Amino acid sequence: MAILSRRMVPLALAGLTSLASAGVAHASEFPNKPVTLIVPFQAGISVDILLRGMAEVAGQHLGQPVVIDNKAGGSATLGPAYMASNAKPDGYTIAQIPMPVLRVPHLQKVTYDPLKDFTWIIQLGGYTIGMVVPTASEFKTFKDVIAFAKANPGKLTYTTPGPSTLNSIAMELVARREGTTLAHVPGKGGGEAMAAILGGHVMVNVESTAWAPMVASGDLRLLVLLNNKRSKKWPDVPTLAEHGYEWDFNAPFGLAGPKGMDPAVVKKLHDAFKKAYEDPKVIELFERFDFSRLYLSTEDYANEIPKQYDYERQNLERVGLIKK
Image (cartoon, rainbow, N blue to C red; front, side, top):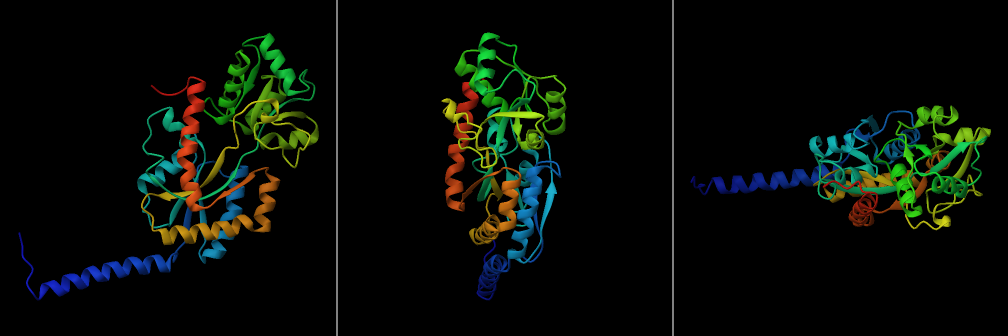
């Protein structure tokens, strides 16, 4: 083993001090270049528009632009998984973390550990998810839907963006609670779902607020919300909780970076996005696209993640989807 000479020891110590100082300087100077925010959905949908608005305001507070990088796929896990595997923990690459990031690992093998591979920054909001039918439908209320489903097991057709989405899990939980079965017709959501429901190919559509314009125009009827609180926009529409179902389907989301981030960098990102969260222009986007406002601090968000992860496992077990 090589032995340092007396002359080399001070040089080695100086080098270590220099590296430590460089690390401190890096944190204090962050950010000195644009920050990339990975959005695991396609550009142009409501959550993408919301996060672009937040990124613009957060960038003003950071002093550097926050650039959106859309990486859709893998049931909204592709982008976060890519970040966990490839991004440096320097704060310059972060991602939106939707609930599938905590759900899919219970269903299949993934390349990341949701409890170990992320640095949690801030929880921001949740989705409004509702059940709609055509206005000409025989179903005038959610109770009508349940009555039909119980009287005709397997005959009620409904569409959601996919079989492992919160939307479909919620419907299967309801079916089991009511002692009946439903016919799920998985789709891609958005325009495809609207075509399916308006064209009479399915009886019910359950998804986030892509249906809002058609509810406003009178083409669709909104029967129930999966959230635990009524919406300001549709104050007369009841929630599943009001119908006696105990599950919480707010589908919270937030921001995270790769594991090992400097707490000082995390704080700067948290503070910038918290200011964006409170900005009137961003509040208007939350209201326009019917997102719940569900802020949690860095510490509270990190503490909440294991609970959300376990809650996803429990719901999947209830509907028989948990991987063996």
